Amino acid sequence: MGLIQKYHTIEKLYESLPELTKHTKELLKTQKEDAFFAKKMIQLSFLELNDYQLSDFSFSFQYEKFAEVLCKKYGFTSLEKVLLDLKKKYEQPVQLGLF
Image: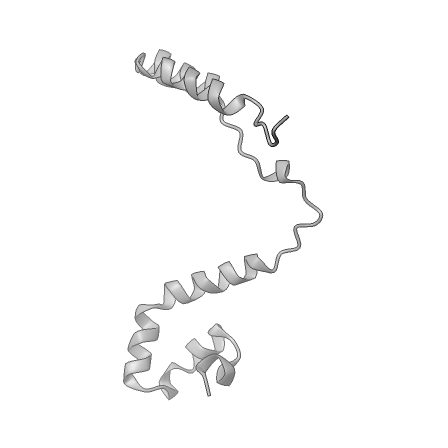
């Protein structure tokens, strides 16, 4: 029988460390952060996303603000053209079909 089948949750498994073999305890102790991260990733996979539009998850990069701070305030003038090029590239609509 697997550990999760026996203890049902990661939390109960870690509460039961004294019952486990020395080798299993060491593995679980060294991989605790990864185990809980994996649990969170699995929970994310069960989210109902039907109520959301893709635009709800979009990231807006404020090119003008970055240009103002980096170029004018801190003197990184060479970045001004790079930021302008990025703005042109990523703010243009993306063509999804042939026409």
